[in-house]
Length: 373
Ligand SMILES: Cc1cc2nc3c(=O)[nH]c(=O)nc-3n(C[C@H](O)[C@H](O)[C@H](O)COP(=O)(O)OP(=O)(O)OC[C@H]3O[C@@H](n4cnc5c(N)ncnc54)[C@H](O)[C@@H]3O)c2cc1C
Image 1 (cartoon, rainbow, N blue to C red):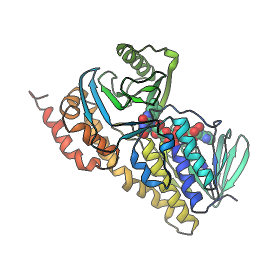
Image 2: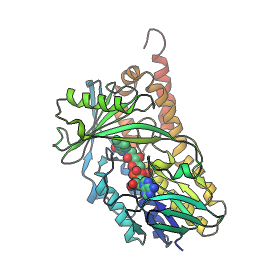
Image 3: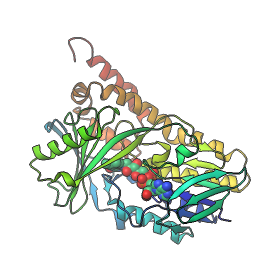
Image 4: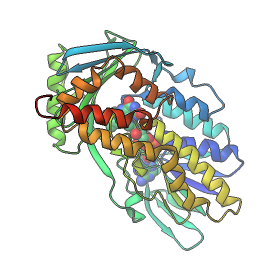
């Protein structure tokens, strides 16, 4: 019997598959889509993920970004050159396939076009029902993303799912080395424009969870038009992101990773790095459980909380204030000369929210005082 079955071949599932296979365990990845599959995503990846692998990601880095530009409703810009390592920009079909290929080279097996339709546990073994038949394993890793059902079937509480969407534009970006963020054009959220080498994407997310998906689509298309971009509404792809909420991430012989665990940053919607981090930690926990360590699975929730969640709790606090008063937030938070570098240091893992949140909250709160906001 396979030691572990992983449901979903996104970055979370493939990172887990790679590390478990490297430990010498038998691993099978089940993926509903036909691979390589596309994924609605801006593709901005923190270079901090390099530390968790023993191979080079260069072949799938489509662009490296060393400048950021922030705007309020398309105007009042502020730009900065990053003093950190550049951010990576990837095309998700290529990036995800690359990571999966690495997992397969390490020994993991893959079955695509295989949709998991039900899960049941008899006390020692999981029965994984799929449209291709039933499989068994003592451990499962649920990595089925924002639209997956597995966490629900296992009885986990609803996650904080927010509407998001993307417009992919196949024309060379004006600033191929710049990641651009706009606040104020999208009510209850923000827009980010990321280059992808030969093209770029406009992404939007309703970070507060308020607002309808169709409002997001309308506002993102308006924004594109105001930027002088020719876009066809049919280019718009709706999707979802699952923001961090403090909940258990393990069940009996099962752990959740990535979007199915709900790990994305509540302030800036970064989801790839936590998906990969949780994949790495899931492999660690299941490896220990397979070696006979009783508390390895329950400890997974705590491991993720320590490595990521505590910081996301702070990001959540900051986001609560920022998205309530975004105009003030932009003026006193984003437009500060140091803001771009602080944000880039957080993204590359040189700083954590705990280093900056207290001060940022004080600055925001002060500016809400009568006569100052
Ligand atoms: C518009 C948009 C822009 C974004 N931009 C960024 C960004 O720039 N940077 C960033 O860090 N994050 C970004 N994100 C978030 C990021 O895309 C996700 O957090 C990340 O993809 C999560 O990875 P994952 O492995 O958990 O899930 P996914 O990448 O979603 O993979 C899950 C896989 O599971 C499969 N699956 C689902 N159900 C089943 C089933 N029943 N059986 C078998 N397989 C199944 C799916 O087909 C899929 O391949 C963005 C998200 C959106 C929507």
